[in-house]
Image (cartoon, rainbow, N blue to C red):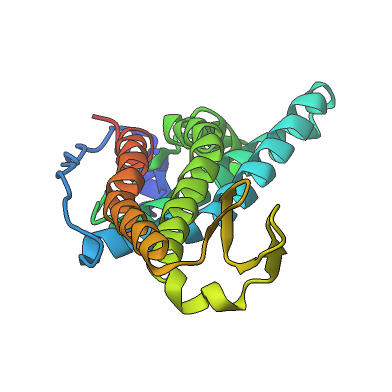
Length: 242
C-alpha cells in the first residue's frame, strides 16, 4: 500500500503556491522598442507612469526593508522568521503592482513569476517555501534598484515637461510676475537670466518659447530612457525565470 503524496491530498493550486514540485515553463517576455512624440499615447503613458509610480515604489521599499531588517534582527529567537516571510510576500505583492502598471502604462505585459513551490504541509512548510522562493528575492532586488531609479525618473519627467511647457507658454503668464528693478532704476516684470537681463520683450519671449518647445520635444525621449531601464528590470526580475 502506497502512502498518498501531499499533492494528492491537496490538489488545489493558487497563483502564488505550486505544490507540484516541478517548475512551470516560463513565458518569454518581449521588450518592444517604443517611439512617439509629445502627443503620442506612448509618451503620455510613460509620463503618467513616471509620476504615479514614485509613491508605491517608496511604500513597498520601506515596508519590505523594515520587515526584513526586523526579521533578521529577531531571527535568533525565531520571532523574526515569520517577519522575513512577510517581508518577502510584501515584496512579491509590490512586484505584482509594478507589473500591472507596466502593462497598462508602458505597454509591457509581463507574466507573473513562477508560483511558490510548496512541498511540505502546514504553516512551517508554507514559511520555508516563501523563504526559499527565488521570485520573492528577485522582487526584493527589484525594489532595491527601483527606489533609486524612480526618483530620478520622476524628477526628470517633471523637470523637462514643466520647463518645456513653462517656456512655451511664458508669454501668457509673464505679466503676473513681480516687478524687479534694474541697475539703471528701470522696472521689469519678467524672468531675470543674468544681471540686468530680463525676459520681458517679445523677441526675448519668442526665444524662450523656442527653447521651451525644444525641451518639450526632447522630454519624451528623456523619460523613455528611464522607463526603458525600468522595463528591462521588470522583465528580468518580476517575471518568470527563463
